[in-house]
Amino acid sequence: VCVIGAGFTGLSAARHLAAKGLEVVVLDAHRVGFGASGRNGGQVGSGYNSEQHVLARKLGSETASGLWDLAEEAKQDIRALCADHIPEARFRPGVAHGAYTAKEAQQYARDAAYLAETYGYDEISVLDTDAMRDLVKSPLYQGGIVDMGAGHIHPLRFVFGLARLTEVAGARIFERTEVTQIIHGDPVALHTPNGVVKARHVIIAGNGYLPNIDRQTAAKVMPINSFICATEPLGDRAASVLARDIAVADSKFVVNYYRMSEDNRLLFGGRESYGIGFPTDINTALVERMTTLFPQLAGINIDYSWGGTLGITMTRLPAVQQVTPNMWSAAGYSGQGVALSGFCGQIIAMAIAGQADSFDAMRALPVPNFPGSAMMRAPLLTLAMTWYGLRDRLGI
Image (cartoon, rainbow, N blue to C red; front, side, top):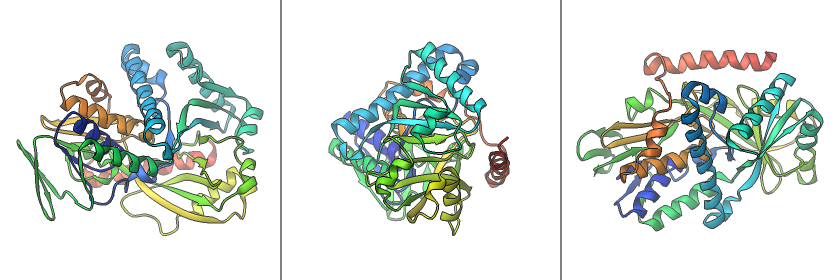
């Protein structure tokens, strides 16, 4: 098996396949964790980027229940890996979701009640305005929830640990080895600048960093960029932002997400852009969003900022595919990738080894192609996201 991409998906697939005795190589154009796996906000969320009751209505209650169980298994896998093998990734429980309006807060509460009543998921506490502001010290939130079954990790440490476990299992990782062309067949031939790899099976696991390597995958996945800044260490001032060591996301369509680092820097993520290039100024828009939420941080120094590319789909559900009889792909985790991406790599590995039930369940998710040609998808998405960004600013 040849895996393209040394992030959560690719390394997880390689690790499980190597453990079953298959010969596995992983190729990455850059370094382990270079993509979204090493650059993300570290939030290990519950479920999918779609309310569970909506999935039940669209897909049927039995299918939705099975998908919920898979997402729960994905979270537990990360917990176990951190506890048993990668403690330096520092899994910490708790993700809060802040609501800007009473209507949004009520929707969060209804969603929590649905999960408790339907699946017995009792990890979510509903917070009124005062309780939310006691936990997250922003004057803007009108309520929210905190999910103690979710959590957060140090993502780069986690992906490095996963790479170590992958090599221990027997897989070989080749960094700075870009795949420039795939020639279908049995075996598949993968061309790189320094040679050709031939493999009986190929897994495409580059997410938003592989927009052109396979048309069928690219048609369902749109690369977008997200950005994070790290403040100077806040020391005791950290308690004026978050009362506990939790991660937070909120109800903006262009979501704000943040948590404290272990040295009490606020890691604040938000604003998005589309296309390959990054803006020349990352900080201005991010700091504006941060200080709007937390006026008490006005004038704080920003020590670091960075961006990275993730993949989204039309339905915000993962695009898990068997592209050909011997080529597989998973991408488009749409903001839920910390939990779901490694698990999708694992279920592809299981399918290649002959156990395809979980893969078939994920493959059945409705993920249509983006409209238009490859050249038209980005402008259309930019137009749509500009509209939603305007709605965020206007509060509608």
